[in-house]
Amino acid sequence: MATPPAPHAGSCVTAQEPCCGDTPRPAAAGRLPRHVAIIMDGNGRWAQARGLPRIEGHRRGVATVRRITEHCARLGIEQLTLYCLSSENWRRPPAELSFLMHLLEQYMIEERTLLMREGIRLAMIGRRDGLPAATLEALDTTVAMCANNPGMRLCLAINYGSRGEIADAARKLATEVRAGRLEPEAIDEELFASRLDTAGMPDPDLLIRTAGEMRISNFLLWQISYAELWVTDVAWPDFMESHFDEAVAAFAGRERRFGGLSIS
Image (cartoon, rainbow, N blue to C red; front, side, top):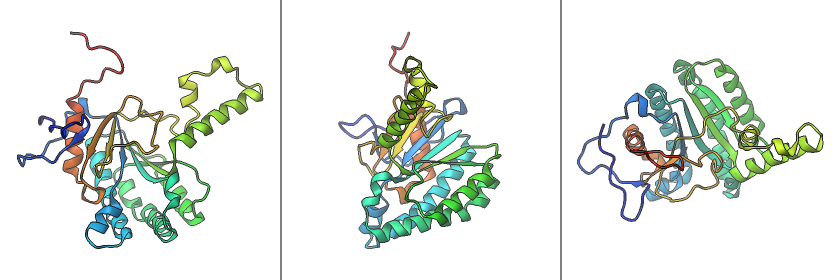
């Protein structure tokens, strides 16, 4: 396994481009993260830096989704969760949002062949309210088609915000308590997690963020409590399989203690 790249000065989570020309290879199967979550950032900035409209960055970003999804499935990653649209993204210009919804609908239809070929299951987390009917129909159809596939789960976070998800879970539990179906003393972390959008899914082991921003952006706040973080300056349209392998190699080189102490 390649030695994990040195972080930027002053940062414990940010990785630089390899300087020696060696491409890190994926870790041995025993050290692969079970669940990888990615904040796909930098589409708009990538396009603007090239004098292109922001929507062209989103179009190129879809090609990256295709590459990385196929790569993860073939590596044996159990789940890949992609942050596609946050609940805060509705503040963007209407034309850009309309294009994003059309792009998502198109992706749902065009990627069915890939998902079936690679045996990938599809899931969505986030609120359905506000999403166009045609987009939801394409999504639901694809989810149903892939439901019995035996391979990796691809989870798309669409119209998703973690604070809203946590508030929704608390509301569900409060309703059950009020109805007499649940005693307050019975509520623990496991029960709370079962009311989240990600119920039944493993927590992420590795969180990747592209385009260099050092923040979580309201993504899986409950679920990433002990995830390893890896941030790259590479914008999502330029994110390649080699970058993903670099993140996995860095993950494999870290000691995960989950709040405990290592025992020599």
